[in-house]
Length: 263
Image (spheres, rainbow, N blue to C red):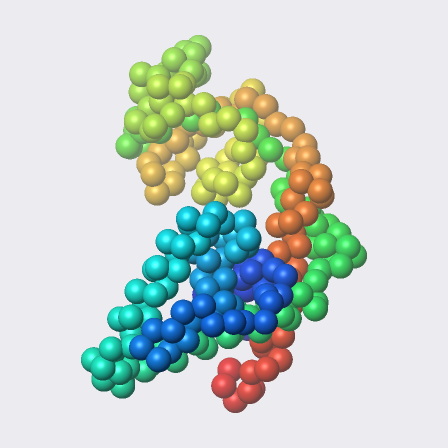
């Protein structure tokens, strides 16, 4: 069974942006704090992570302020007490986990950079998703009440010629009541199953002849219209499909590394 991606590895899709930035020039010492050098590569990377911009895109004033922040970090972490705290087992464990998480993201980003989704894979995944979509969408209203008896009473009023929208405004306890019970257009999977099954079973312009129970209460449903469920154009969701394909590739790669005895 496939395991979900852990947070560290799942972050590879976002860290790939940083990994794809141009290589930095050879590092030079910018400042020395208590015998520890701060090099230009560290400064530039700190600027990138803090601003999400390349170093040459920030102003001189902002760069100076960020360097001051970095100097403060080095000042506090090069004190004698900091060296003692660095040996605390919990601090050691936390540092190890942060290091492994960052390295896992970088390795995963490298894998994705070398195993990008192809046009064929994207189209195949898009086709698979389209095939899973329900064939129709529905436009409906509903009246939600607390008891089956109330719902039966409302159906009797409708049978007698009462207006559905007006009844919804005066009788429905649901949030759509003031709007006449209007649910707009929706695909069946957006609704709980007893409700969606009832909508599918109705004809356009008809209401449920028996109350429909869900965890929210008792419903009387009016199916107003239906239409074919037109899939979104591939280009409008291409990035989402591409990410899904690449996440699947990454998951399969991780599974290939796992010892079967650990499963």
